[in-house]
Length: 265
Image (tube, rainbow, N blue to C red; front, top):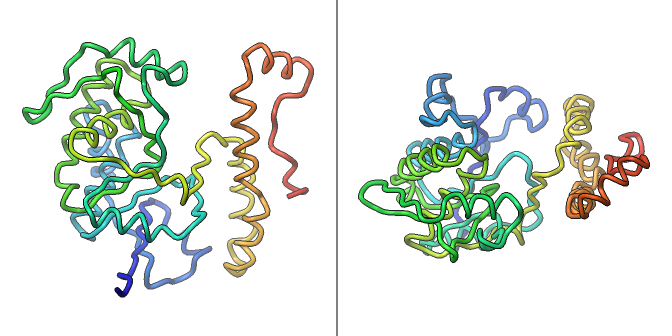
């Protein structure tokens, strides 16, 4: 079976910055979104995290098909064709399972304790956090445009969750609960690196785009690859997972984790 053409949609208010690096490409689109639309997509809770739901809804309406949303802090590591095949079969995709909410990290456990026993109602459907609730990271979200018709339900659920406990992760909890209602979730982690924790890389990435935007895409790609974001992501995550006292000791002794010097990359 012939592969269907893939279109890349970049939702941004600075399309020129991407075009300087990517050049004119027939398979890359920059959808026009008004300031009013960006604001409306933030929901009644006015959360930036809800913008991705607006993006998916907009893409489903204007570019129908199998949709695979990725955050900007992601790198493809393998051809995602198998993910699109699973989307075609009606399965949902999210980045990775973060495990049971009840036994996850400190924040997950706090969220579980705060929300357990509360029932949230959206469009006559009831959602509740339980000991079986699995939290998925929403750095990647995949669904069909037919499924996307119901995305306003996710916004409504997220708004209720934010009102109940105002923590950043409520958007991905809303998706986790919503998908759990109807279908299994496929993890995109084998195909993509989502380096969400590596905020310290932003200055180097900015410098990279500034310095290499006018050069060939191949030269830019080589320099970007040399940053070794995958290794840095793993190193920083390992540091995060150290006991608090060890992190404090390393900070006091000048051995806290830092990004390497950009000139050495």
